[in-house]
Amino acid sequence: MNKSKRLKRAVVITGATGGLGSALCRVFANAGYFVIGIYNSNDAAGAALESELDGLSTKFIKQDLTVEGKWFEFEAAISNLDCDRLTLIANACAPLFPKSLQLVDWQEVESQLDVTVKGSFLSFKKVLPAMARSKNGIFVSILSTAVDPPAKGFAAYAMAKSALGSFTKSINAEFSQRGIRAFSFSPGFMETALTDAWSEHFKDLITKDEQIIAPEKYAEQILKLCLEEERSDALQNHSIFTA
Image (cartoon, rainbow, N blue to C red; front, side, top):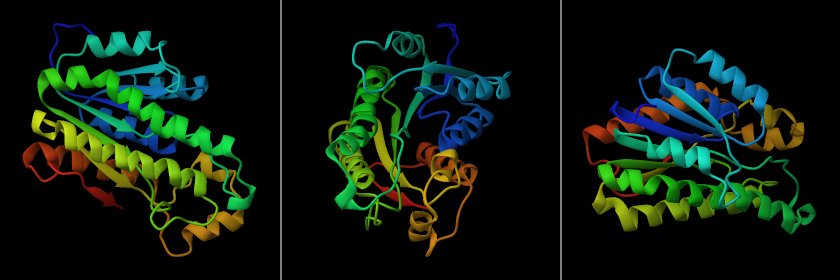
């Protein structure tokens, strides 16, 4: 990205090759955003998404969000940004295989916390200087309807997502007066590569009382919320939007 070219809107999307992440990349890129998609391991999916969105303003970066000190390409991309508004969508989460609480070990909890909370914390710290310069930034945390009330089998996931929600509130408490605002969005169950591997028992626990929505529909709702925030102060205080 040429530093002299000023952008109206740019967005960083973590977990960019997942079901919701890839949908977010498509929806925001087609809405005119410069999209920086961050993914950890799926090179084939990253290449396919980059090829699909060829001709739109995108950049895809392979980055382990949990490792400090190795963010060189990401830092360079952010430092070269010149935009009116920068948005960070904290969407990444660790692989999730629902199981009863008595079968969960602490390593699984740590894995969820590392990606969801530490990854979001480090990502925000990297984009904060750019948001502060423009005095116009948005942080969006992706939570889940499986968190409150917590669904059976999702204890580790719910712990991490709850902590992410608390972090989102802290961002508003400290930075809303500087033009940086934050909100959470809680999608329901989605048919994705992540959920395809779940047992039918746990799928039924999640979907028995709710409709299955395509990731693209949730991505469109998140885009709408981000654009509505530009036209009002509706999101000035932390809000949780449940789809």
